Every structure is written in structure tokens, then in C-alpha cells.
Length: 392
Image 1: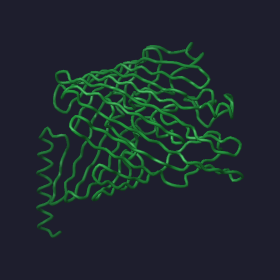
Image 2: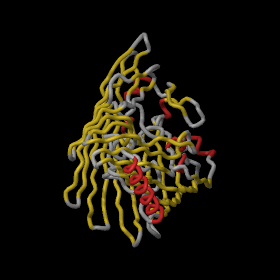
Image 3: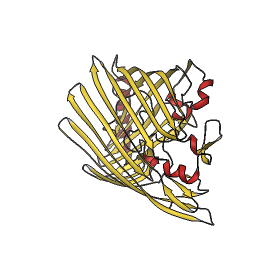
Image 4: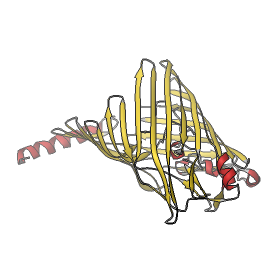
């Protein structure tokens, strides 16, 4: 680029920046020749009142791992208030001649809250995506809008971001992704191959829908013994607009040897995929789903959602017994016994969200969390969450 072109580009960028600062647009935009860059994000506060026990994590989302069960329910600390702003995020989106797109985005949930955490970092050119972003084994089509950042158990797929290579052609996409596996009682697990996924997502009139599948290898190798198994998972999700202001949506999931991808099926997120019995690797299956409705009310909406996930621990219980210590740790750092593993996690969320002015959202939500463990112990918790978000 010669000096004249550089001057013109700087002048254009300066003018665009001034206009972006003065406007009510959703992002600060800079345009120079065929390059457009946007800075976007939001500032957000989440505040919670835990009614009967403190189960808040960073962003004040509810943590299944903190729900007391069994005799621990006798020592609950009630009426706890907390708040933070670590969900706040900032991102940079750049497009070049409409064919090449790059995104880098972060929030402040890192290391338990307060440190910058990388959410997205990828480039995409003509359907080829390389980098870190939402897993291809994921869909938001059937999600009910909630204020809790970690949302409902049983939402479709991973609901998280992974490093991947993805190719998209229309409604169909394929990916090879960094694998996520968890093996109980293995000594040493390893990743030998990437996780392979395929997804189809489309819409027809008032119906939006998505379906996906994945397959991956589960491996462990202690040096003296090793084994491999194949894990897989599938989901379907849909949303139906009954009227322009009323919708019903949900998802169904099944996994066998891929419970990391069964959302919120473990202590907080994914459960174990398999366990070692002698020297043999045995897979663990699970299933779950969500159902919800949304109703527009004035400048806001009322949303009601229910989610549940269940893991089948019967074979592991028969082979290993309830008293064996797993590789999982509780919030205090103590080993969790097999009997303490979560068999079923479920939650209900009811909220009202509204926008008093453009780019501002406020809302209040009631949440109920329930845990059932392998040994029969259970527990529950109730909470009220308030959120205020300011977009730019």
C-alpha cells in the first residue's frame, strides 16, 4: 500500500471510529479498504441469593458439585448472597472482502473468576474453519433462554469451545476436534486420535432443528497395561414457534463412552466416559434432555426450562464397588468415591428478562437444582439470580 492509500485508510478508520463511538450500534466498527474490524462485547453483573445452601460458582451460576447430599445436608449454610462481573467479555471480529473472517474473544472467568480467559480464536475461509470455537457437536436451537451462565443440564451437545478443523457446506458440517475424555480408575489416559463429528442444522417455517453425531477413541496406557474403546454420542434439538411471541423448544441426547459431551452429566459438566476393570476398558452410557417454553411479554420475555441427565453406573458398581476412590475431587480437594458420583443431575429455571432501552438487558431468575448419587444419597438447592447486561 503506498503513502496515499495509507493516508486514505487512516482517515477512513478514524471517521468510522468516531461514528462508532457516537452511535448506538452494537459494536465499534473500523473499515479500511476491504477490511472491516469490529470490537464488541458487554459488561455484566450477576448477583445471587442462595436460599438454602451456597452453590454459586464464578459468574454466580449454580454448581451441581456444591449441592449437599446425604448427611451433609444437616450442615448447610443458608441465605448466602454473592455477586461478580466476570462474565463480562470483549471480542474482535475482522472480515476481509467478505470471504475471510477472524475472531478473537475472551471473558474474565479464567482461574475461577477474574483472569482473562480465551473463548474464541479462529479463522474461517469459504467454509473452512481452523482454531478454537464452539464444538461442531453442539446446537443452540433447542436451548431455553436462561440467565444462569451454565444453563440447563441436558442441553444439546458439548455447549463448549474446542480447538478444531471444520468444513461447512450449507446446513451440513464436519469437524476433527481436540478430544475430551475421562476414565475412572485408569492410572493414565491418553488421546490417540481426534474426535470426529457431523452436524445438520436447518429450519422450515416456524420449525428450527439440528441433529449431530460424534465418535472418538478412549485409551489408557500405564506402561504395563493398556486398552482402547470406541465412544459415540448423538443428539437432536428443535424449536417450534407456536406464534411470533411463543415458542417451545428442547433437546434429546444419548452417549456411550462419550459422557464428556453429555452436558452437565458429571460433578458439574461431563461425566466419566469409561472405567478400567482389571485391564479391560468398559464404557459408561448416559442420556438426557431439556424442554422449555418462551413467552414474549411487553419489552421482555418469560422463559421456563427443565433439564435432566442420567448416567448408567450399574456395571461399574458391580465391577468396582461403591467404596473405590475415583480420580475426581470434590470442591475441598478430597477424593470422590464411586458411590458419590452423580447418577442424575436435574434443574429448573424460570426467569423474566426485559430491555428497558436498546443494548441493555436485565432479568431475574429462580433456579432449582437436584442431585441423585450412585449410593442413593440426594440433595437439592433453591436460588434467585439477578443479571444486568450492557452491550457494546
